[in-house]
Image (tube, rainbow, N blue to C red; front, top):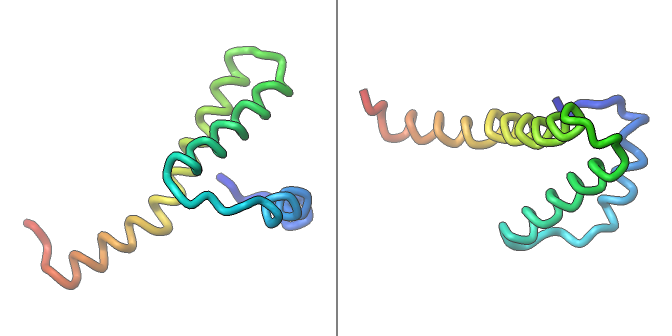
Amino acid sequence: MPYILPEDRVKYDEFLDKMPIPQRKGDLEYCVFKLMELYRSCQAGRYSDLHDCAYAVQHCADEFRRLYLDKREDAAREANGDVL
């Protein structure tokens, strides 16, 4: 998952902290795609490289869902009752 050593995060955080914050879904999608393209351009172009890139984004989406969306769903279920 996206958990890397704190000392390895510094080089990315310094750059990302200077980047304008995407304000729309399309902006965010563009930024994510550009990062994927940068990663791809530095690899050998094997299927496994492309696969790793696509699955890295999927794993981040899964973690985001686990951390944020699932908690919202649980809170809504608690407030409104279960559908079953």
